[in-house]
Image 1 (tube, rainbow, N blue to C red):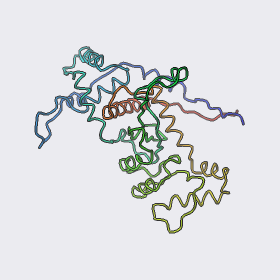
Image 2 (image 1 turned 135 degrees about the horizontal axis):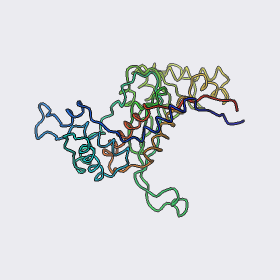
Image 3 (image 1 turned 90 degrees about the vertical axis):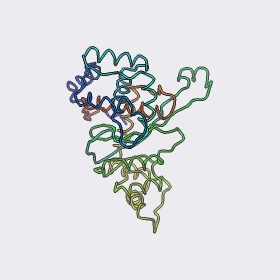
Length: 315
């Protein structure tokens, strides 16, 4: 079979958006200037923070976009406020590093879009270890450490709605309940691969009123007297059996359910690694979570500038 070919129909607009991604035009709104300093929380003892969480997160986003070390980031921010004539005190690099540990702890929504569908998947990010060339040439010389990045993406706008960074030993199905609990109330369906075909995932979907589009395992059987949260899985099994029950039936079922939308999560991961690399600069998990959150915010900003609109052409 010949490979399907696509052509970008809005190349002029998309080309402009790619140029804008490299723009160094930066401005501070009056609202952001007012929120630069932290406010003392009522009932909390001790000295309040000097800088707000938004200020620290802004610094991390700029660091991610321009690939700056922490010390260079401090100098970069100082030069920006000096050239703009804005009276803002820039946090030192040590304070940015310390405060980053608490910025990524909470799983928060990265976009306020009202979405109906989510595509969810995970990928690996390297903490340290040899590069691919060295491993292929000389073999693995020391232990390699990875983190797992879980993304929930809107298939229409390509915006990252939720993200979560975990240890590499955490399974995808263990993270899904937290993602669905934090998902917008407008979400009606989510698309995931066979790793989410577990009892806990279906229970979480049922409690949140979300329909799972997940292919059951090939050896899956219809369960009589199953609990209510397993009804979606039973329906999928019956639908595949009604289409023939073989591999072709599974392919047809995926086509009818628009399961191919799930691949857009892999596309988002490809964009993430292309722009920011496949490794993490921070060394502990809490700081890495803040680093990933800042990168996802930056990626959403770049995505909002414009995306390609591809159409299938005759091969």
